[in-house]
Length: 221
Image (cartoon, rainbow, N blue to C red; front, side, top):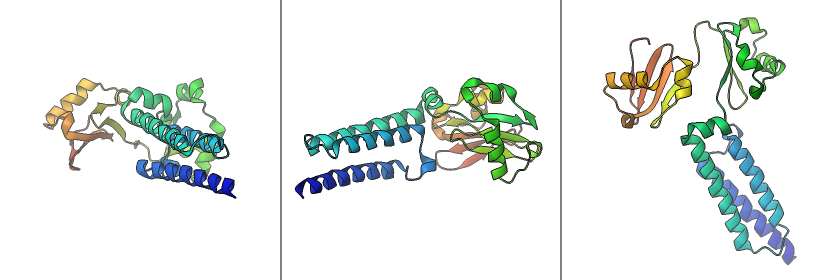
């Protein structure tokens, strides 16, 4: 009986630490999780499963190992959030596959993208779109979901700047550079420290300040 109580105690401790970690990081839904979180869940499962029935491992060592795992996952998520290269490597970027009704074959056939066009067709049908002929723009999101627009001339917005960091890959998609973006900030009398996000949509910039205020660039770029 004592053995089973010991197993139950270890299980509850592991369960509580993992749940607390998910709540503190706001990752309580599957669609909020990054690949790092999924790998972390396997790690937590391995730690809990490997220790829970082992009487030779003291409970304090078990807790320390779990806390080390929590710290490591949190650190990797922080790096993903603040380091563009690591984010692209670990999470990925949206992949446009159609624009103006044309297929972007370079993106579709690129081996590293691993795009299954039959799966894309199934995702289209699940959204009530019966044919590729209805699609003006489509992109595969890092989560694997499909964003589709049927209105010609409208495309999803791009985040060009986030919390002090210029997103050069997004700038390249609109054929602009960091110098151009800095000039736009100067025209609005804004510095990087003032800004939370810069969004590009339909040829215009939206400057979202750290205060929550939004300034709009009235001229198309």
